[in-house]
Structures are given as C-alpha cells and as structure tokens.
Amino acid sequence: MLFANVSSLDLEDYKKLSQAVKFLENTDLTKTPLGRSHQDGETFYCQTLEYETEAIENFEFEIHEKRLDLHYIVEGEERIDVSPNSNYAVITDYNNERDIQYVKLSKDYNQVLLHKGDFVLIGMHEPHRTNGFIDKPTHVRKIVLKLGR
Image (cartoon, rainbow, N blue to C red; front, side, top):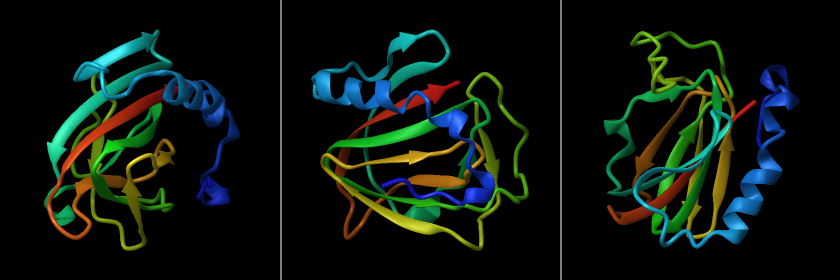
C-alpha cells in the first residue's frame, strides 16, 4: 500500500524502495545497533530506535527535505499521524544536519496503526508525528530507513 496525494507525489523519491525492502528482508533487525548503521552514502541508512510509546499529542509534526522515512516495527505497536497536506506553517527553522523541521499541527491527517512487521513510507515534505501508543503505552523496537535520491 502506498498512500499519497497525487499533487505532492514525486516518483523520483521512491527509487530506493526496492533497496529498502531487500534490507528489511535480509537483515536480522533484532540485532541492528541502536542509532545509525548500514549507511550507503547519504542516500540510504538505517536508524534503530527503542522507546516507550506515549500519547501522540506529546509530539510535534515534522518534515524532511532530503530523505523519505520508512518506519518498520520490529517489536511492539505504534500510532503515526501523517498528513498529505504539504501546505504547512513552520514552528522551527530547518535543521540541515538532522534533516528535520517541525511544523504546526495539520488539520487533515491520517492515523496509521503499525504492528510488528508493518511499515509505512512517508514522503519528503509530508508532515508526520510518531511514537504514539495505540491502546496503552508499550515498548517499541523500530527501524527507520532514511531514503534519499
């Protein structure tokens, strides 16, 4: 499933998807080190995270300019809110080193509920917020693959 608004879809952004799926299929994701690993230049790297989910309202929406985010749940479950609306108001300046900018809560967004083995691919400039619990706080091990052009 790819969920996108055609007005903001750029197919060039999705050329790394095949590489990402092969990585997920061929890597023991329970053993990737926390933090950044498996880097292939600036166009592909793995970020392994572990945390307790919280109320999603505790988090700001964020966008990225250089890379797509593929969020894959190794253990646990998580709610992610994603907005197809790329007309957003910024809260912070863009952080080039971290490729992140926080934006105001979008009026239109979709709730994505991810369980073990699920992933969602979030496009550049698509506001999203992560780390939300579904029914109750739970421990999550997640892989975020950062996919650039």
